[in-house]
Image (cartoon, rainbow, N blue to C red; front, side, top):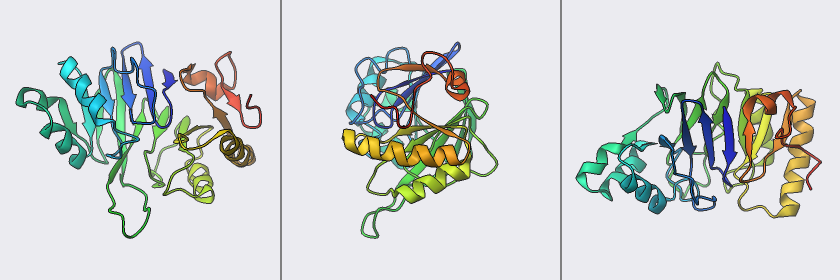
Length: 239
């Protein structure tokens, strides 16, 4: 399994059987991102995770593409498509187990993290890919029960996030590798600060934080082994 980061919370996951695109949002680098992709997995409806214009254009361009999204977002997308295209938008919720693009997908969670009492909560679905190889939580600290992913995609900075809760969430999942995502609002100083703090916490728990640059492709097994030329940059070694 290979992963290609496309900025913020978006990444492409590829195996010999196919490829998936997760959370192609407005902060991500999406040029060419939908080419050859079997399916798009959306955690929730916020624009930084779901660029509706580009997703709809991709559906219009390909009769083979499938888009998986929580019910409210799926309905929003269907309403913007002609009737023959609406079947390409599929509703997904926590507790499902299916295969798409040759990749096993299991879903967890259910609700976006609380930002403020005045802001409506929306549905959020986390995706576990492969044989517990990769977990994308979306915007949520809900800890899935009974899994230990090889690689955790760890949200760094958001209106709903606190670094202490981020540390607790990552520690509870106990993944060997933490890969930072959801960092589209951070400048270089912010990235260095978060990487240093989370890197120290990862090391203390026997894990490793590996920052992957947008546009780069990495073998998942090499990240876990900490070997190979695409093994990422450990915390504290940013260039």
